[in-house]
Image 1 (cartoon, rainbow, N blue to C red):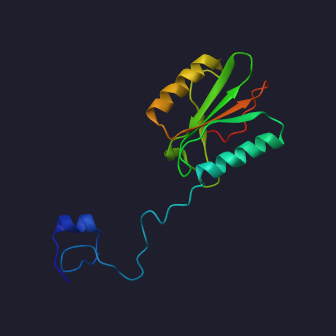
Image 2: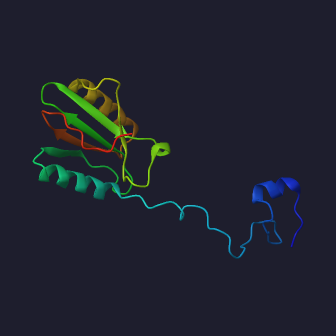
Image 3: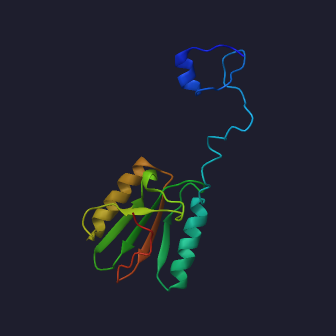
Length: 150
């Protein structure tokens, strides 16, 4: 075993073994860390298909306006009340993620309802920023929100 200095101990973790080259080595019984520990996230295309089916089963008109990246595209949901007002829901930050909910959303504006043209302007900006996003539009005069919100 190679002796390592105090700064290297902080980088590698206290009591961590190293190979002769100073690289972290394997130690038996150590917990695995990294991308394999994170819970698997539902693919975007599967979530969108389930949302479309759920709305259709409740007789709520819903349309897929833009198909993005199948594995991990961001989903934006526009709820149009068909009276010139609408609401836009965007993905919630990952810091708000919970294990019991597949996807969390937050309202992308301050007021409860804004002009439909303003929602379209926001969607155009987001599309310019992220070409892999999904846009789902729900038409509901009552303005029911069936998303999991933050």
